[in-house]
Amino acid sequence: MSWRTIILSKNSKISLRMNQLVVTNEEVTSIPIGEVGIVIIENPNIVMTGHILNALSDNKITTILCDQKHNPSTFLHTIYGHHRQSKHLQAQFNWNEMYKGRLWQEITKQKIYNQGRVLFHLEKEGVDELRELIAGVELHDITNREGHAAKVYFHRLFGADFTRGDEETINWGLNYGYAILHALITRQIVSKGYLSEIGIHHKNEYNQFNLASDFIEIFRPIVDYLVFHYVDGYLGKVEKRKIIGMFEQKVFIRNGAHYLPQAIQIFIDGCFNFLNTGDEKKLYFPDLQLNKFILEE
Image 1 (tube, rainbow, N blue to C red):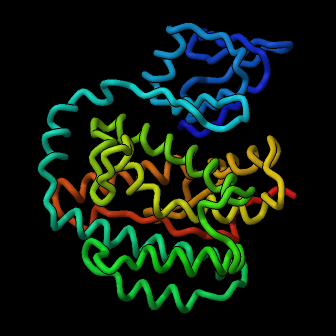
Image 2 (image 1 turned 180 degrees about the vertical axis):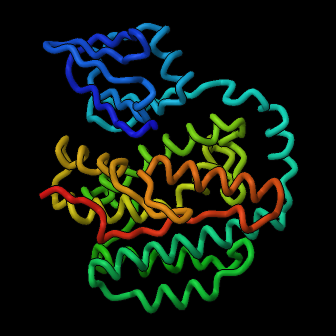
């Protein structure tokens, strides 16, 4: 099972030996490549060959390169993600508009529900307001309940003066976590032979990741919750590491608790099954049981 998140922050050489990812610096560390789900390269002086990059891609490992400020700037994106890619792309271009509208309606409701879980767990006001908004979500969310809920939610979570988009540490933390999560979801989409550019709701011509922007919504509250705990006026390497720790948290989905990357995979598989068949029984949505999250001091 791919569950490990590897952060490369020291000058190192990476090699592959007997299906082990070998990291060599002042120490030598071997990790079974089958256990690695995410590799984050923070140090620009990491030495690795094209052979290693292909091995990371072949094993569907989300590989993210950070800039000098340790923010995600690039990720490894395979050209061909699945042996039946042509068939899947044809299906994607012909997805039923009703199915897309229905899925976006359910994603919006679940996102608002998860936002409510965060407020409830933190004993904040606003839970009842969010519940009322859930009841009003229509097909395609044509009345934009998602936008109304976001305004209520962020004000209750971070204060009435908080504005999403301002240049300050909370937004930097949110953007950092969302970017890492976005990369993982895009990698999952591509690995299943679909295009991340073609969304069901997001259709921005300048966004190469419209479908990932759709699927990420219900997982954003996890980042919000961790930023609330760990980002207090400063966002450095330690705070970022704690946000990345979201991949070691377990999420309840399909009658079981799974590490976040596996939960995302189950969710995305369900979305594709629904979009291809219209069978709502194939949809699985995550339930954030925040009381079971393990937080560092």
